[in-house]
Amino acid sequence: MNTRILPVLAVGLLLTACGGGGGEDKADSSGGSASSATPKANGPTDTAEPDASGGKMIVTYDEATSPEAQNGKKLLQDNKVLEDLADDINQSLKLPIDVPLHGSQCDQANAFWSPDKKTVTICYEDADLGQKIFTKAGDKDPVASAIGSEDATFYHEAGHMTINLYNLPITGKEEDAADQLAAYILLTPGDNGKVDSESLKAITNFARAFQASASARTELGAADMADVHSLDQQRVYNLQCWIYGSNPEANADMITDGGLPQERAQGCPDEWKQVSHAWSTLLEDHWK
Image 1 (cartoon, rainbow, N blue to C red):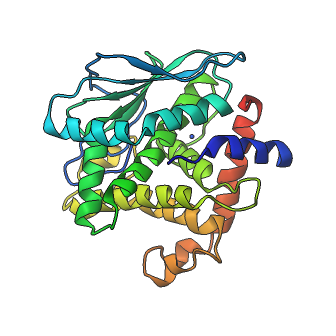
Image 2 (cartoon, helix red, strand yellow):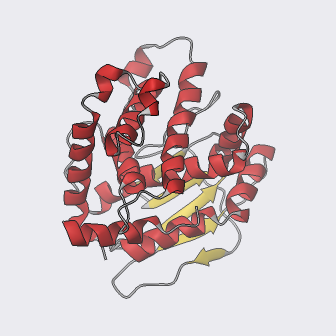
C-alpha cells in the first residue's frame, strides 16, 4: 500500500485518547517471536530519513537465489512494499533503537521478529506464496492482494516488535495480541472518520490467506494444539470478527455470506472495542 496508515492513526489517537498469511505449504503461518530461518544478506541498504527523536527502521533487500524467493523479492521491491511500511513506522512510532527491516530468502513462507537481533524479517517466499494463493482464488489483481496480505503480516510482526521494545504487558497469547495490532492499525478510522479502503482489503486478504491454509489441512495433531499460534481457522474467525465489529453495518455481508457465524458476530462490536481500547492504551506514550 502506498497510503500512510500509521501517521493518520496517530493523529486520531492524539485527538481521542501490532505470521503472514498462510498457504498450502507454509511451515509457520504467521511468524512469531523468533525463527530458525537465516537471512542471506548482501547488497545496498535503502535507509529511511532519520528522525531526531531516536531510532529508525532501515530497509534491506537481501539476496534471493531460489525461483520463489526471486519472485517474492521482485514483488516486494518493484512495489516498494518494505519502504512504504518502514516510512509508516518512522513517521509514527518513537523507536528507541534502529530496527532493520529485511526482505530475505528464508526457504519457507514466513515472517518474524527477532527479539535477540531486534530485526523484522519478511520472507520473499511469503510474498510469492501469497501471489499463488490469490491467483488460484481468481483475484483480478493477485499481486495487489498479496501486497495487502504482506502489509498485514508486517503489522503483525510490528506487534511483536512493540511488545518487545516497549516492554508492553500482554495477557493471553502474544500471537493473538500481534494479530490484534495488525487489525487495530488497519481498521482504525483516519482523521476523516473512515477506514482506508486499501487497509480494509489488506486485513481481509490476511484472513483469506489463513483460510487457504486452514482449508488445506486435513488433520490436526498435538503439535497444532500446543503451538503458540491459534489454529489458522481460529485466526480467520478472529480477524473476521474484528473486521465486522469495527463497522457492523458496512460489513453485514460477512454474516449473510456465511463466513462469520452469527453466534460469534453478536459479540464482535464489544470485542473490537476491547481490542481498540487495549492497543490505543498500550501505544499511547509511543506515538510521535
